[in-house]
Figure (cartoon, rainbow, N blue to C red):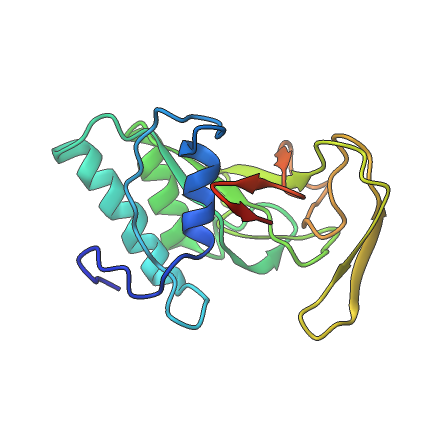
Length: 189
């Protein structure tokens, strides 16, 4: 989807992720963001659009801006025990090609309470897989699906992976980063 930078959907998840990085209290306040939207107006990202976006960022690094070093892929779908390179070869090729061009892709493992499965593109072997964890002890935490039913519950503890975060023991590695009770740029989530 190409909209020439027009903010046709307002503030959403991508804006929030950008604030986590670049806000004055963010992890890299001096970083610059190249915004590439792959979500449509009703959510969801077509994997083909994600591949095009990754390839676009790689090409931009090579031709225009060699300072581009990281891609945030806070999106995904499906469920894979770990490596999905053979199942999603276009995605695997794009992430791998970006890596060899000097860009590291950080990909969310998913937020569907799956134990034993992670989403694409986190399942791509050249992506850095990132699950959500707690950064403090919040006591008992219950997560709800949009329809109001219970998704899962945790007794939170600092650095424990949240129960809503998809994880699998089949992968050799993954990172975890705070994914609960984050306030930045006036937004809370």
